[in-house]
Image (cartoon, rainbow, N blue to C red; front, side, top):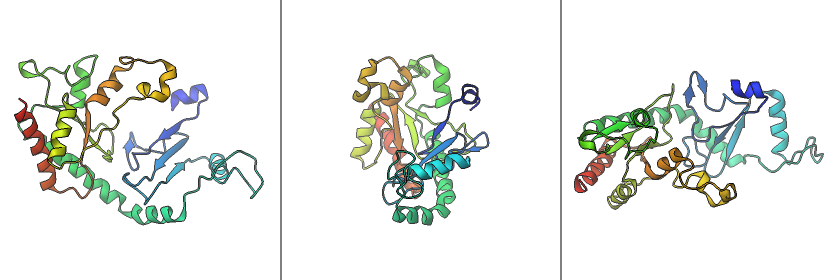
Length: 255
């Protein structure tokens, strides 16, 4: 924020997957001039369909946002700005309002599940590293580049919590043989997801910028190695054990 203030910039904070997260005493969505939340059904606080919210602690900005969400009109049918129909419909608002009191409870469950995963991996016999060790290993932070015993990379790199309050919208691990491991997990009924398989600079819509593979190696290695494991609040200890056991089986079978 200090950089933005020095240069007269407005900070729009993307907190779509971070509702309730904290860093250095500040809640996600409250740090920038604007904070954007998503209520997509898969988010920690999800509606029954599409929805979201923009936060600000500035009265003038809030007034303009309310104007823009209603076709830019105030009073009705008098348009000072070009806006749109961006109002959250009553049904989605009712669903989010009903779920909001449970958010802290669900967050605590996700945190317990993340801690359980960390303990299970530590006891699994697999060669484990964490993300801090990965980034300290070399300038090119790939799992394959992180050499361990017998000059081989670790099986799995686990996330390390560096914020005041991590809400674990995802529990993301890294593995050099990510795609093969994902296929093996799917064959055993374990659902996973890749966030995100193609970095922005390699998306077709940005081809006019003329970036090539290798331009942003950190983004590319993350796209090639990361995998999100099930972390939803209702995940049981038995299910978490099964997930880690399936990952053990994969590395034993491919050793």
